[in-house]
Structures are given as structure tokens and as C-alpha cells.
Length: 221
Image 1: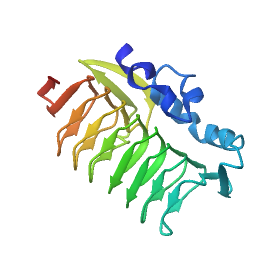
Image 2: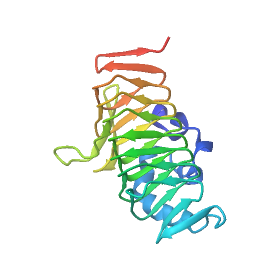
Image 3: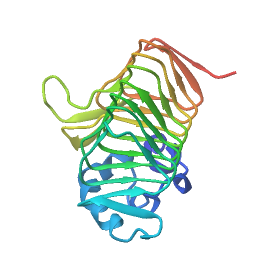
Image 4: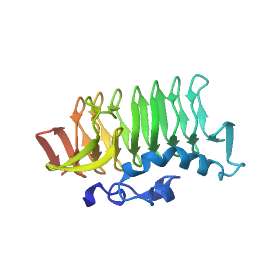
């Protein structure tokens, strides 16, 4: 399933985790080892650029963090990132350069590439968000199936096994997710695709498309 591969979804030059992601074929394969990798990477970060504000939490000196934000361990927050009022980073998170984590946003076990925006009331768990991707207000990644079975990715009727109980969404570069949308477990969205507001999305959505509903996905003109 080439369309699901890391190199089909992302330009790895736009994340501090590029060497880590390059170890894998599919982006969700990194989730089990992300926590350990963050600790490993954090110890190598230049002290003139990053400050370890508490154990295994490294923050770039150019980043802005609201006093009300909570940042759990381990975590890396890169240059010029903005962590706004009441953001809740539970841990095992990489926040890329220039990325915005906004009011009441919760992150857990995820990689946010550079210039990502999750600015208002978003939940991002067990997910990878590509360069310049944006989640509209209230949109979330749902990362556990209601029956608690292992997550699969549906690609045109073919189910790809992931072996994971927790898997949110993989957003390619330049993906736009409309307000109050739910990205169900096992969602993979190809790069430069737009998701309409109030959508419930499941499985693979092809790149360069507009998702209006599950029966109407059109190519961008």
C-alpha cells in the first residue's frame, strides 16, 4: 500500500524526527517506540538552543509557553512553537518548529511536524500530523475503537492490519481538517487534502482531494 507509506505522506525534512521516521515504512509503526526516542533525542539537543525545563522535557528558547499550559514528560518543543493557554501535553509528544498548540488542546503520543496548527479545542492522540497541516476548531483524532479491537486501515475495501489498539490519524503534509470533524481510529489522509467541517472520517482518503462525505470525495481542480 504505497499510498500509506511515510514517503508518500510526508517530506521528512520538515521534522526534527526525520531520522526516526525514516526507520519505518508506515507512520503508525513509530508509535510504540516514540516515548523512548524522545528521551534519546532530547539528550542530544544543543544546550545553547534548548532548555530541559524538567526531566525529559526540552523546550527551545525561542518557543512561547503560556503559564497555564501543562507539559508532561517526555516532550520536545522546537523553535518558535507556541503553546497557548491551558494546552495539555500529556507526554510522548514532539511539537515542531513554528507549530501552534492552542487553547484546551490535548496532545498524547504524537508527532507534529513543523508549522502544524492545532489551535482550538483539539485532541491529538497516537497520531502523526504532517507539515503545515491544520485541524479546525473542535476537530479530534479518535484513537481507540469502541469494541477495543485492533485498528485496521481501510483502503478501497482492503483492510491493512496495524497491530495497534491505539491509533488516531496520520495527516499528510498540507492537510486541512474542517471544524468539529472526527477522525476515527485508523484514518490516513493523503497530502494536500481538505476535509469538510462536521465530517466523520474513517480509512484512507486520497491525496489532492476534497472529502465532502464518505460517498463524495472529489479531486481538487
